[in-house]
Image (cartoon, rainbow, N blue to C red; front, side):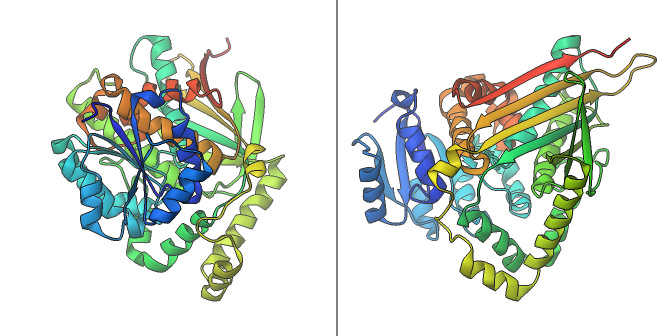
Amino acid sequence: MSSKPTVLVLGATGFTGKLITRYLASHRDRDAFTLVLGARSQQRLESLAKDLDLDDTVQRKVIDVTKPHQVNEAVAFQGVVLNTVGPFLIWGTPVVEACVRHGTHYVDLTGETAWIKRIVSFHFSATKTGAIIVPSSGFDSVPADILSYASAKALRDFTGSHVDIDSSISAYTLRGGFSGGTISTAISMLEQLPPDERKEARKPFALSPAVGANSPGPRFVYSLYLPHLKKTLNGGFFFMSMPNRALQQRSWGLLELEAAADKNHPHYGPHMKYDEFLVTGGRLSGLLLSLGELLVFGAFMITPIRWLLKKFLPQAGEGPSETTMRNGKMVVQNVTTSVASGSALPLQAESVLKGKGDPGYWLATYIISEAALSIALQFDELPALGKRGGVLTPATALGDVLVKRMNATGVLSLESRVVEPSA
């Protein structure tokens, strides 16, 4: 039996699964792990292998996520399950449950806060089996989570001691497309999730084991001053801000609990507030963006309009062309500010995550693949929380290991700097 860790890609023949398969099959560390592709159709698996010219070292396995006994058998190995099969609300829970049972690690692409709230119930069991469960390990919600982490760490490194965080704000500049899977997930959340669960998922700290300071609520116009560049970014509401904030607040809560037991454990402090927005050309365009999103959300609430969307928008398995994805971009700029201490002015750290390509698909491929490999190949270097297991977050489970692996791709870059207050 091979001593190499296994990475199992569930949904390998789907739109995002194909991108991930292609990346992992030619990865610079390919010799260090066993790659297994899982999907419901043997024919589609063989077609994928032919299209990507995969050799026999890439294993193929028929796995139907609608059959729990099949999933249970498939994930009984030493390594990581990389799950792309959504909507996770419908198909994800049996996979997580099986991984927790066997102590198998797990990452996925979900942005479904209500579903993550469900699987948080597996946290205690996962700490007992050692399973590292990290939902939202792609574009949802690594940029939000890891930039707050990186900026706070930069402040700690600069001062040599704990720094209480007052606020952490991220501004997204994006260019990309949408896949049918994204639209299918949005519709399923509206049609299949009970209203009370939707309401609970929208509450502050919905995923956190503790409750902290309230973050700013949604508004029509946003702005962020970049102290290093002496420049102000303006924009509007970002439709992913609520799930991103919920995930980031879980990081906050997990770290605060650790610090309560060990005062030397890195944490953000009780005052931290997180916010984010989508950058536009100015305040007026930010307002128009927010109004447009409000109209779209309202339209989604109307059943006949959802029916039309199902008919005419991309179907599951469809997505942007390769040209569109290659021409996309992502720049996420974060400013994290410390709590003022006495007469001293607060410190600020700026962190920037950049990527060339469509954020939700092209770049998410790199992000989630490196998240999986962070666990599979560098377990001993993970943060203490990560090595213990549980239902965690990218920041708390992977930390610096993920930052370094993303930077090593040559496609993504994350840099941080501290900006000292002017006299």
